[in-house]
Length: 94
Image 1 (cartoon, one colour):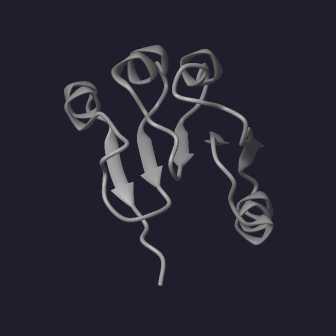
Image 2 (cartoon, one colour):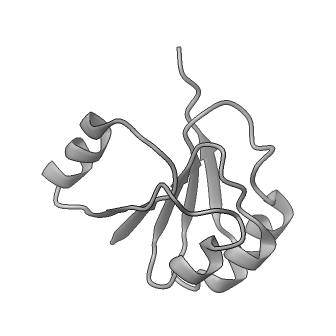
Image 3 (cartoon, one colour):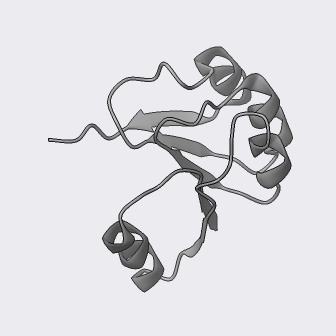
């Protein structure tokens, strides 16, 4: 399964995923506007502040989980995710 990290995330977090054999792609330069073009074949999307719009969710045909590395869900179109049966989770910091 491919994981796309569309924001800055610690190298330790990325390394931990890679050690588990996960196919990880880090693209911290992505924006809400460019994200739909980058999600082809992605199963899990990890964001911090990058907005996940309905356009991104519609473009991501294999997406099953969106993780917000932070508190809240205000950057994710929850209605679009729910309509597609995509799970959404957050991971607030300390």
